Length: 392
Image (cartoon, rainbow, N blue to C red):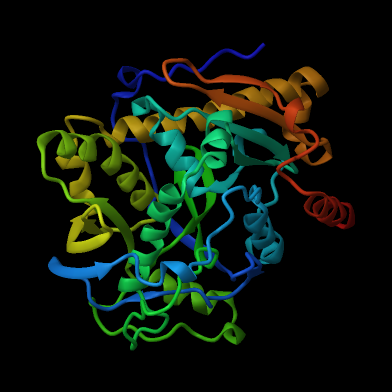
């Protein structure tokens, strides 16, 4: 049996943990069919970023929207395609549990970091130890499955409004204006892959990025893919990305409290984990008309909401959770294969554990038997890496 991990914010009110500024190690684009591409074809740009009044009708061409299927079960497949594609360049091989790297998406990290202050959304995470590293993947809870199944047309419209707002602000070229006069394709996506250290843990994670701001010096188009990934990574590393959000107008004190208690926490975590320093919020009315743009420096987001949540608690809990995952996997390895196996991970089969949390309870861990028919590592990825290490 594994011990539970307690979640109360009071446990994690210590100094902010050591967190290195995220380093870009790669990039990827997803097209209209959610196919992976090792290029910047979906990279977007924002030219006009300032506090101002606007009139953006988020209902424009709503009849032409191509919605992302709500029941997509992509797991971490696109991140695995990136890791496979860039395997030789990145060389993430490892044989020791203490130095095992974590691979996941930013959304999972944000979800975990916000847990001490969460009182509504449960989560499930599967951790798989394979060839010396740990792969983390969020799995849908029954609450989320039910919510997606029961989405109304208005629920879908709210989601589409967020994508449409991006279309009013972003363009596909640094020298062109945004073009909202067409339908939105919600499946297209540009992501960066980051690497950072959180105390002793190394984390490699994908993060969907909204766009590069073009009001801080001259911004040119990215280098050609023919120049190789290093040239493109250097280009991307010298740019300032923004995060775009929409929110209903704040008119009453209870709305302001809810905004600071719930929205800003996730906004801060998302941006902080991707090294983004500016959030552009579009404030709309109930009819979907954005009437005001407001810029929020990410460093100020936590200050304005400190009555409701603290960033050190979020990041300390995230660090503790990663330590907990390693400890549970190490115990599993020791019990099944002996302690010497902790320094010989390349020869072990896949080992998976299921971590589950609900509000007002601790994090609990069980075997991941319920996901044996739907593992987070597809067979093509397992076969490729097993062949790689067999040949090495």
